[in-house]
Length: 611
Ligand SMILES: [Ca+2]
Image: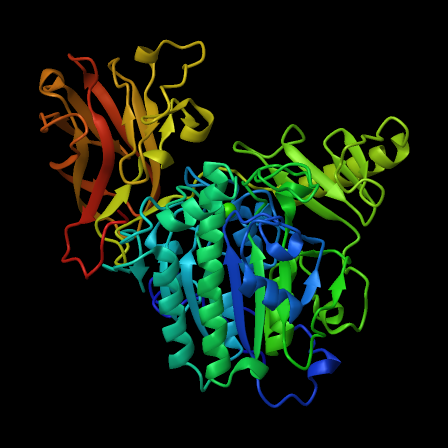
């Protein structure tokens, strides 16, 4: 009979036990009689453009290992992702378009894969694989949404879309526990992945190696930066090229280990990037880059190597999508897909084996918006030839660089594609709220838990749709038509150091949606900075009719964030709202609020705040 799929070993008792009816996907004839399941190594880089590879015509960048991998692989020259990180990762992990998964943003809590979704790791684990993730997750900030709760047996990861430190990285968790590591993050992740390969060489494994380079902050070895500067590459691009070269060398070491461990024949290796590139030096004739829906924003390198199964060096222009890896890898693994959700991806196995040279897709859809998705967002829909980018129509066969808008001469094609996109958008957004999920409170995995400033609602709106300012280095952004003193503002100074500031008027407030595991007494603290001159302001914290009041104390400075216990509150079980409100703000600002910390009063099991 069909087995059940559990959402995660540690989570099964904490959350709802997920027992699903599963349907067999159908195993390709290719694999009939296969005695062993191949290992799967999925390597994803972050912000590496289609053009940041020697094999794609870049004359400066040194990527010998990836170039060699490409020569040993089938290459899909038209493989598509979404314009930004988290949307692609959601599609990769679920086989479903990201807007179906509850995820809608790369920040502000919108980068959360909802719990009803089933991950590739869960499905491969169910198929008998040992699963490991090493790198950037970016599908949920809080412990309940982390990869070790979502099908990964082993995990060394960070949860956000970005991390501040590449040397001695301080954001990595090992199976949920903070760890101290030495070295550059690219090497740290590769070493951990290598250990995973060595430890699991006698059983099928799924290695998801999600490098966070060459994403900003572009912290690269001086020698690599100088090497590319000396070649005439501008400084920013020289950093990107240096990070790509370092990553290429790390991938080379991992592939060498696979060879020396005797695993080459039995290992499928896949390589791709998560969105379009950010470098400008060489763009292979493509228009746009990261965050754009032109080809440069959504076309990713894609190589797939499986010795004896995939023809080395074969290239195909048949279109594939990141959504396809879920069904493709399940087919390779002899796994089953969840039957209670619809997959958007289709297996690429017939394309990769050469059984066909046709794309499984009639249309591919792309959309990106920092706010709620709509027809006003950046969007595109493409078939094999025509691509509609908002109101512009391109013939990709004649004009792969998307330079000649032919919407006026082909109005019927444009109108038909627009209609298809409209219907598709209505389908994938049906019933979706596009707001952060409720933050789990009293969850034994993370007790106490910190309510993050970026998840707060200001004046009934979420931070992403109100004004946001960057503390440094950019100057504060203008606050629209409202004077600064009338509004709280989300202030970004790095993921650990973001704050809510601008608390002036009595009654002004921000709120978080929380999901309390169990009714009871909870300890509430605020973590904030406050200048001596501003101290003495009064605030109230309210939840479901009960209220706690406190006075803001000075800290060594406005940017010294210290925890201050406010008191205990009775919280009801389930989803509710926690609001922090100004009672009186006698100085220039009530405080720079860095975190609201809530912990249950019962003895907490080992765990850590999210920050
Ligand atoms: Ca990215």
